[in-house]
Length: 156
Image (cartoon, rainbow, N blue to C red):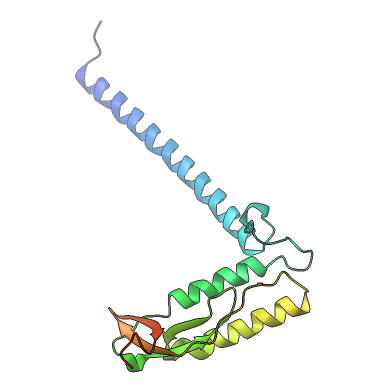
């Protein structure tokens, strides 16, 4: 005997609601696991977050996160409208030798780099081994991004 049309529709709605509920449970579980992973990455205890080039020294558990935060800040502090918005900042290894940043972010980044260097020295962490050449650079705003270029190439 065939089900009446109303019962078939109700069964379909129940099935759809069950699938939606299961999807919500899976989504909530994934969000929980992702938040746990992010928290592990922040405290430096998650071994897979370490960059392969760094030696995992006992007192240097947050060095990689420190570097990542500073590199992100540098990348996010390069917006400009005119050349006057940009200033040159010597950051040295591992952040690049001379970095052009928005002048309003320059001191904040310089303080973060100094704090990083102090952390590396205090904890005897892995240090960069590359030297920065002395260069005569000019900073300018190109396509709304602060950049540094040799003065001769920049027309100065």
